[in-house]
Length: 425
Image: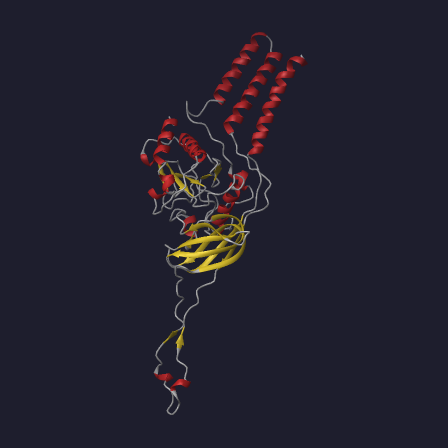
């Protein structure tokens, strides 16, 4: 009897091991602490002094030479900074952003001091183009000021900022230090689940065969087969499966919702009634980063969105790096219709997917293209979203005044629509 039970029991134990390993891969990882954010006011242009004609009160008394009376002076309002203005500052950071007052069309170039003491161009940044829906608690609590997207620079100690277009005042550099996290593996849910179910079914069938005699054995096996057929049935026949995703808990278990207390205006994520369309973005970030640095960028964006912008959580619903890794963004559940802060006025009922990089000119890597098709097809299946209208998958520029997701990414949208349509019932 024991010999007959040995193999099926090993299969059952194997199934439990697969389930445990899968849960562990999606669980909490040891992290070095939240990213540190420091705001550094940059040197302002010196204000000039205007001379005004002396008033009657400054007319010199009779017999006093006029040159001995100083002219009346008044400082004008702060003069805006003009293109060509520069400032250098020492930092300990790997993501750089800017805040400023005045002209929302201002643009800046960021350079980093290399080890050989030469300056390397890190990127160009301007006004960010996403945010929560107006009129919502999060939208009402958000910071109303000119802010850029954070730019990945890698570890830097000195940066130089140059105003290249427009004007600005009160320029403040936001230095984000997002430390390395280590391995945060994705959760290949379907593969692990199918393997575990198969091992478990074979093990239970073996136990039944060993312990249940005669006709009862056939009846028990039939009941087991029926239960497994129902439990393992797909949501839709022929529908695409869930892709591998790095969960919000895996990359940010130590990063809370509403990190600033009551600043975001709501105590929990908002869940819409469904997902009607997908909005494609790019993070206007550097394209030069390693696969291990992707999680540093995601955590740094979270710190900026919550700390500088005053949002409840990271704004995007999902992010995809250049290697095809998919990260769950805003918490609330990757299979839920979570309302993000990625397209002001169009967050409710949409899912926002951002390529980590700048794709105005640089092509989107093939791995990232494949992942966005996998992700959107799966999301549309979960939410029973009709993929056939052209506006089922749009670029950010289709719903807001922005260049996002960049010309190189925007040109791919027709292909994404066709690929998703072919894979959703």
